[in-house]
Length: 83
Ligand SMILES: [Zn+2]
Image (cartoon, rainbow, N blue to C red):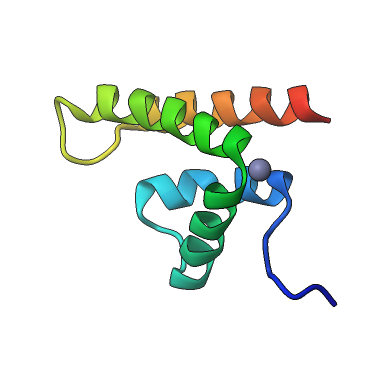
């Protein structure tokens, strides 16, 4: 047992699209936030992803299917890079 509950980077990436959509469970949000505070790699990555999301959201309040697909593509590429 560790005395902290930080998730692995790969787990963060899995939950990230829901987190950015605002669909993640509160517990997941909390764990992702905790991870980002301790992991500058993921923090930088989330900033990049957020820019993409904001760019796509500028015309509509909710994320379009196109934006969602692009986001998932970015996430997949990022996961591959880290394996
Ligand atoms: Zn990380």
